[in-house]
Image (cartoon, rainbow, N blue to C red; front, side):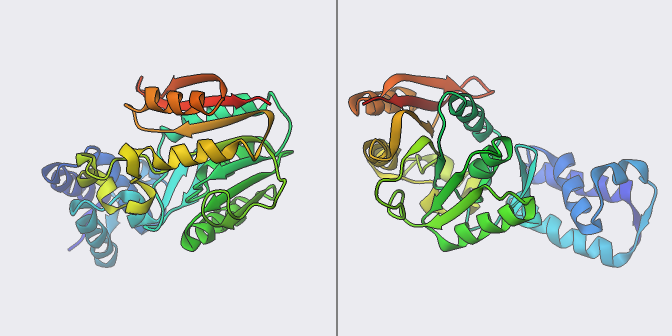
Length: 282
């Protein structure tokens, strides 16, 4: 079977619509670009180009995975975050646009105080690498519990040629040397309740449960980090969390009870509570 690019994309779009995809045209285009190893502009420039059977067969295999619900990022092994192309894998969360709000706020606060920056639960390295790309004179450290995540983050660092980032493996603060202090600590920790119905929907079904779910109504890891972070923050240093859209009040209470100042919750681009931050004062 031989089809043109335009015909194959239309064929795929129809199947994706039937499967319930929220973005059938984009999904089809990204998969075909991956098979052809071409940019999206190529599909627009050459809609009448006829594709051979091998390319169509390879595309159909990927399309079947997407129809089954597997995230595009895992299928093609890449996701853009903060304009950085990042490799992704099923061992890590897929970087999301909402998390770019955390990066924006971290950059704002980092401008107020000199010193190193820590990203806890770094996953693909998205937050750490975004901050490092914007702050080349600052050192950024990323920590993740899983060795696969640390290896992936380091691979992304090398591909982006960022020399001011280091990645370590361990549980939260445990890999850190005694006495080390940071100007800013950012984290997108697990914050979903164990029985949250969203865990059975969309891309989340394929992502590592350990990076999503936390005890104590999704707040256990946030509480642990908030309590421990004071030991690792400089005076006037900042702690920032990404969290669920209904957790703003609870996270503000946690930070306030731990003595953080200027505690505030900021919204994401959809108008939902998404990032809560506070300043450590001694």
